[in-house]
Length: 293
Image (tube, rainbow, N blue to C red; front, side):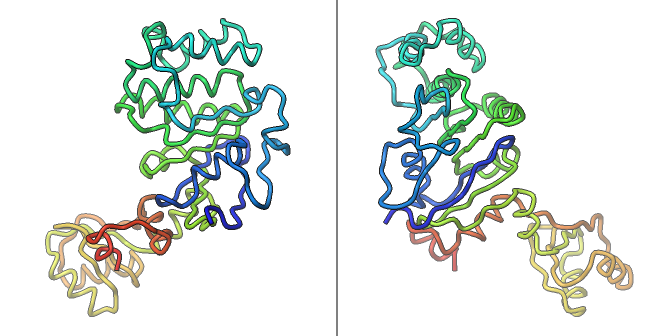
């Protein structure tokens, strides 16, 4: 069973991150939405209708599932012109999306000579071709250089700000943390969490406090005696649970323990994701199995 009661809604006006371990059902879900795979039960709808019933479907939903799915001997602009012809879209629109994704200097080069990052941009241009209100992108950050990643972060946010529904599947939590406003986390074909990125990070932070000190041993001893749970994050940073920040400051002063910073700990999206999906990972190497225990 690939999908087991997978249910969620992607709303307009925000980027929704779609994340989960390998084999969780992300790509299958996207294929079902686009009518490439058929579900035994349930419905996958775009704007309230099945994709296969849409007339000129690229004007309703634009998708990038595989950046390599193109004819390598065809020039990039011709690739888009072929798609445009099937949807009654003008060549002027083709040139507009080529410029929008930054491929104008390479538009007449054969797509087979493109790097992975350039193919990603070409795939995004194809998804945008008919100016659809819904966009689905599978791993769009793959292959992009640092400049390209900065570009796509802002680009995806701008598309959502225009009122579009944007669904982005990715394994790069650091990129989604800066891009997505909402997150659908899946594991073993089920939805594990459907929440805002801010709420997910807040729940994973567990009211912990980050403490920076050059006297790590003395600080750990004093805090442990006060009933706190203390973990060393690195050489001069501790994570403290069980005591409020104000109590920690008072305690350190009372014990003459020097410190340079006491602040509420903010979990990363990656930490929150790992905590949520710890029991949903199907494929794990021997070393990873030990680390997960």
